[in-house]
Length: 173
Image 1 (cartoon, rainbow, N blue to C red):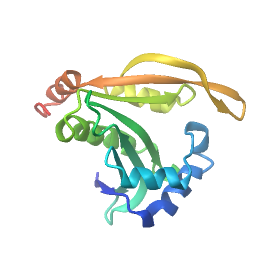
Image 2 (cartoon, rainbow, N blue to C red):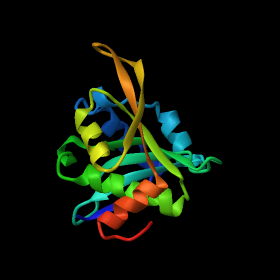
Image 3 (cartoon, one colour):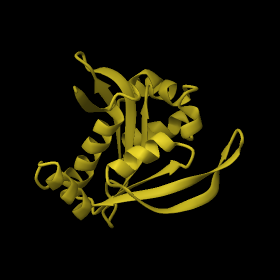
């Protein structure tokens, strides 16, 4: 699979907003204002990327890491959003694997973590299959059109990631 993460430019933010506002994605995320994305593009504690795939590396979504300068070496996968037509083909898994490598190898993370809405069963299954462990739930912490949803906090530690890479025959990070 052709996949690359290209640093987001301010000129990409119309695309980012459109992916975030897509009706198929809205139930699973809490959209940001444009100024929040601008800050994430500019602030060194964040890494904001456009996901590009295919033969021509067409934009397929975006990802955000936060805590890249965290003194406790705890990096958050803040957002992973793909175009609906690019979902269900392994691109999300490829992104998670690439981001985990980036967090542990490039950013020196000890802990790579995220939160995900409990109704997002597909994402929960993906994260579990990639070695993330549920740490707890923030019960009914997010308003939805139907009421409230809980956030599931999950993480992957550096030694767990190394063991996963070893199992896959890829060596240590």
